[in-house]
Amino acid sequence: MIGSTQHSIARFMGREIESDTEVTFWNPPERYGFKVISGPFPLAGDMKFESEGNGTKATMGGQVDAAGFFKLAENIVKKQIESQFITNLETLKQLMETEVE
Image 1 (tube, one colour):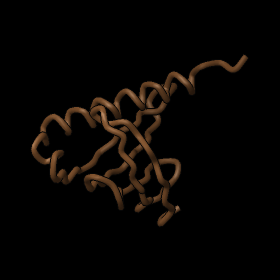
Image 2: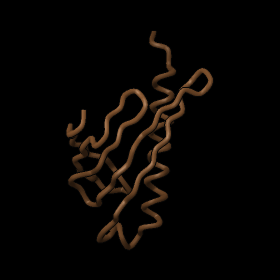
Image 3: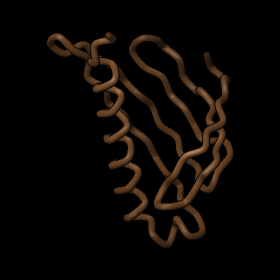
Image 4: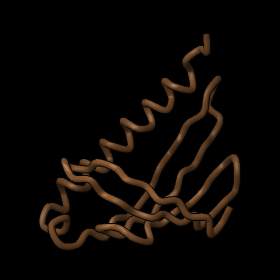
C-alpha cells in the first residue's frame, strides 16, 4: 500500500547497511514503486511484472543518487547494485519454483 515502509539491514560491498524504504506506487500484481527514505544513499525505483509464456517477467528500474564514499565509487556501486538485484531475483525465482516436500 502507498506510504507503507519497511526497515532493512543488508550487506553491500562488505558493509552492513540499514535503510528504510517507502512504497510510492502500488498497482498489484503489475507494478509497484519505492524510494529509500533513510540510509547511505537515496534510491528510487520500480518493479514491473508481466506474464511471459508459462512464467512471469520481472523488470526493475531505478535511480541512485550516491554521496560520500559511494559517490567516489559511483560506477562500481551501480554495477554492484545491479548484480545484487539480479542475484536476489534469481534466488527468489529458485525459491518460488522449488517444490515443497
